[in-house]
Length: 343
Image 1 (cartoon, rainbow, N blue to C red):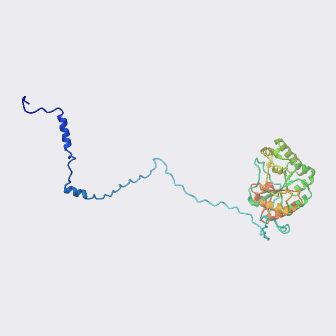
Image 2: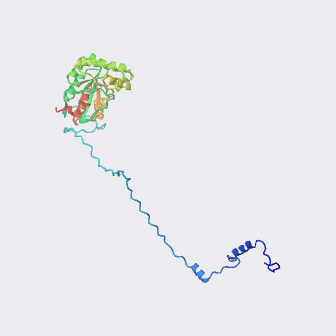
Image 3: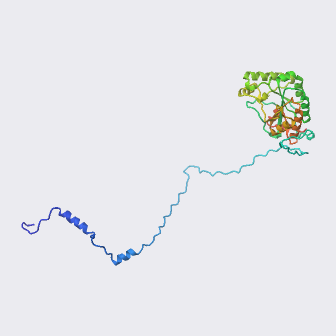
């Protein structure tokens, strides 16, 4: 540009001013109203078509394959359970009479006259029967095989009705186990021999009928050994391995001491409750029936005047239902039915 030209020099920052002007010129001035063209207005008035979205197909999951070298898992085969083997019960005798339940219990016993004609279905082969070694655990019942029951007697007290009771057992064809009190055996040795002569098994009921729960181990062994010596000398039978503690009273120490000396502590699953003064033959018979089942161990005493009648009725009731009475060694044998015989 020549000196003296009429072109005036632009003020500083003109380039910035020009750029801003150009930018503001791209938008319509806010002061001017926008008037849409007819074509634009028609385009706005026409609604857009509705578009339905089509979902993409999901990929097919890959098939599970076992790893190379792996053994495919097998589907377990469900085997239907097989029925438990059914034990073949001993045949029951045909009852000739029907029991009518009494108002007190369905276990009420019939009278001795009504049961007089009942005969046992089976008897027990004569002893001596094999006796097992002592067990460390107490015994309350047998296996229940063959509808066999053990009704034993704690032998103590008066002998006034003992002969009559032994006659009832003979008439019913019952051989059983007699738990002998040692001090009683010293007083009545002939009765101990008579029970053995009639084929009954001997067992131990201690010597003094003291509470074994309160005894030391040494006292327990001394009591049992003293009775063992007396009974063995009188009958040739050992009382081992069967011990019934007086009153059923025992402790862990007494059970262990008896076991180590050769005796198994035998309790019971049912009894006559004949220690009660207010009981009678009806009640005692019913009580024994309530505690009876295949393999049950029951006990009674020998001294009561009404015990022969009670036992006669009880045995008749149970024999009419197919039960057999056996000594304890037979009941606790692996198969008590091996000792059953036809009467």
